[in-house]
Amino acid sequence: MADKLKATEEQLAYAKLLDKGMKVGLLVLIITFVIYLTGILAPHIPVNDLPKYWVLPVYSYLEQTGIHPGWAWLGMLGKGDFLNFTGIAFLAAVTLVCYLRIIPILFKNKDTIYGIIAIIEVLVLGLAASGLLRAGGH
Amino acid sequence: MENDVSAMPKQRLPGLFSRLRQIRVSRTALVCLFALVLTVFMFISMAFISPEAVQAASGSARSVLPWWAWPLILFIVTFLLGIVAVLGGVGGGVLFVPIVSGFFPFNIDFVRGAGLLVALSGALAAGPGLLRKGLADLRLCMPLAIIASASSIVGAMIGLALPANVIQISLGATILGIVLIMLMAKKSEYPEVKQACALSTALRMNGIYHEASTGQNINWHVHRTAQGLATFVIIGLMAGMFGLGAGWANVPVLNLMMGAPLKVSVATSKFLLSITDTAAAWIYVNNGAVLPMVVVPSIIGIMLGSIVGVRILARTKPAAIRYIVIVLLIFAGGRSLLKGLGI
Image (tube, rainbow over all chains, first blue to last red; front, side, top):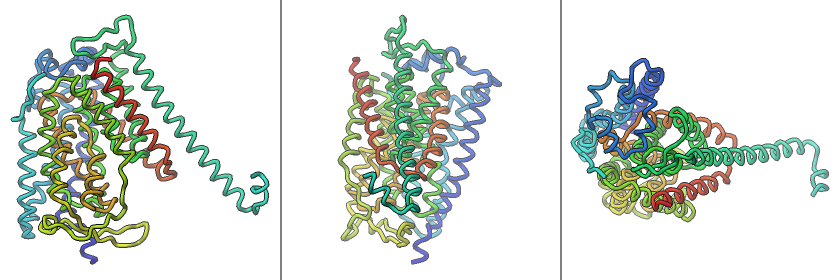
């Protein structure tokens, strides 16, 4: 009974990594935003021009600003606005990393079904993050 | 009545007066908070009215405010939403998307991207504590998360492909539907599950949690797992399409349909959002629908608001705040519906 009351090994491992990842992600998000606001790194879109673009549907916005979707932001990290994507991507990647962490624990404990479920989830999140899935314009 | 009070023993009077004062203060604070939220929305609406207030090609009104005013107002509004969300027992995402898309100049594509990241950040922040305490259950969550996250990817792609007015109308209708769910859905602290279903037994979706308020250890298991999984297809689709956190739907399904205790349902739902919203958020990020100037003030504002909300909640739990949330949702859902219809 006492053992069942404790969270499982994989649950605790997940929680530990999630806690660290979330804190680092938020910190990076705040630091990069301060860099953006202070203009230490010049943005790709001047802040004064933002109201012109944020009213547009995303496809017109990408077309007019010459921004490429997907992982193209990695090549623009020298720009103040795109630097913010480091923190955003970090937060969006934390869950995937947590799943990768628990897969060996699940298989070590012979919890094969949940090990397979975790692998499928990694594939689903990996597909979403890959940039291969593009939505049609409107 | 006055005679009754004067007849009470003197030592009981200070306690009674301080309680009455506390109730009065908390009610006043709530009324002030509500008035402040409404004033901010009115101010935002008025900011659109100008001689040049024309409908842009995209259907979005142009504003007369300088660029920096919008992120600043967004930060203030999300801070207030963070407080209201905690006190009302709802996720930030469900308030964020309809209110920001209804009253701010940002295109709904960017608002949904920000909404998902706001809901994701809140879920990531709450996740570790809920998992460690054993309130959120990883085994219960994982099978549901596959369905919900895969569906949210499809929902996000559909959402980004649909015209803005269709999304606004559907969002308005969904928000008003959520209001109905909030008004009508009952909650069950410990639902009766006579026998766990075969699927949940095979997946060992059960557990024990310690109920601190009663000191009891609650043994739980679930049923109707297949129906629950099927319902998460719809929940994931809606979460991805509208950028809403889906706690409003997760909790009734986990609690009423599958029979998980209320606390386990609420905690697992919150944790589940961190997986569902991750999948959909990547679609918005990779399709360019994320603007840091919209996302970051929103995340910081709502998180700070949540911290303040939790402190207020520790002192008082006003039932009235739930109705304030409902009024806000009706207001925002109605606005979204009218905006979509071009009225």
